[in-house]
Amino acid sequence: MYQSTTPARASYECMRHYERSVLINAPVETVFAFHERPDALELLTPPTPPVRVLRREGGLQVGAIVELLVPLGPFHKRWLARHIAYEKNRLFVDTQVSGPFAHWTHRHLFAPNGTGTLLTDSIEFELPLAPLSEWLGGWVVRRQLDSMFRYRHEVTRRYCESLG
Image (cartoon, rainbow, N blue to C red):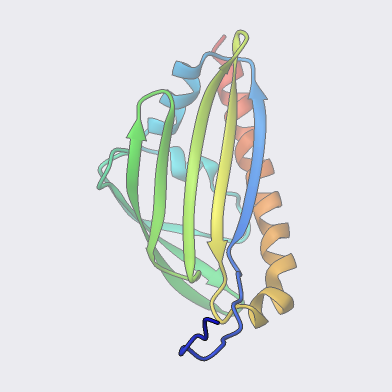
C-alpha cells in the first residue's frame, strides 16, 4: 500500500472567472479599431469610481503596458498591467504585473456574428488573502465588474454602431 510522506494540506481554489458579452451591430474591424484608439481606455473607464490612467505604452500589442491609479476605499493603489497576447481583429490579453489582485488576466475576444461582432470580456482573478477575502468581498468585486462592463459595452456599442 502506498503512503505519502507529504503531510496533507487543505487546498483552496480561489481563482474566479467573470465573463460578459455584448452583440454589437458593427464589423469586427470597427469594434477592434475602437479598442486600438489611443484614448480608448479613458473612454471606457466609468466616471465612478474615479480610476486614473497614469501611463499607457505600446497600444494593444504584446509587451504594451498600462498603469492605473485605482481607488480602494479611502486609499489608492497603482495597477500595472502588461499585454501578453494580441491577434488583430480577434483578441488581446492583459495580465496584472502588480496591483490590487493576487491574480488578474483579462481576455478581450472579438468574434464575427452575422453582420455584427460578439465582444466578450473574460477575466480570471483571485483576491489577495483568499479564501477569506473571497468570502468577505467577492460579491462586491463581482458587482463592480458587472457595473464596469455594462458601462464599457454600452460605450463600445454606441460608438461603433454610430459609425454605420
